Structures are given as C-alpha cells and as structure tokens.
Amino acid sequence: MNERIQKLFLGKLELEEELLDFCNQIPDLVEARTKYSHLLDQVQTTMGYPFSNQFEETINIYWSCLGRAYYLFGLNLRQDILTALL
Image 1 (tube, rainbow, N blue to C red):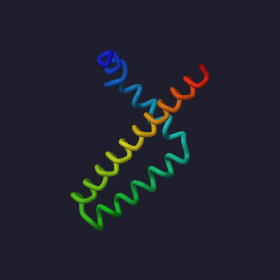
Image 2: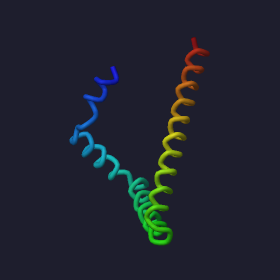
Image 3: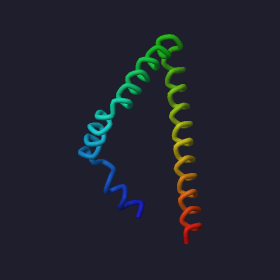
C-alpha cells in the first residue's frame, strides 16, 4: 500500500507545481513566508549559517511533530465522536 501511495504522489512535478500555485493564492501564507524568509536572513547574518541552519532544522522538526500530534489527536477525537453517535 505504501509503495502505491509513493508512486502516486512522489516525483510528480505537476503535483508540486499545482501545490505551489495553490499556496501562492493564499495571501496569509505568502505574507508569512515572506516574513519568515526575512527573519531567517537576519538570523543568518547575525549568527552565521551553521546556527541559522540548525535553528531552522530544529523548528521544522518541532512543527512536524506538533502537526502530527494535532492530526493524531483529531483522528482520536473523530473516532470518539463516531463511537458516541453509534
């Protein structure tokens, strides 16, 4: 199953382009990305690339874990709601 999903989504340039186009249509996301880039440039200029890179990697790992936790919590919440309704 995992292999089928990878074949469906990974390596599809059209999908990446569609996602980028979609994201560029969300004004809040475009503004947040711009502010993020400027702030990261300031961190890199002030603290140097190694620190900036480590900082960015750490933030990315944290947000990924947090996003996964919220997703899993939502799955459990939906399951609880459906169980209660049945």
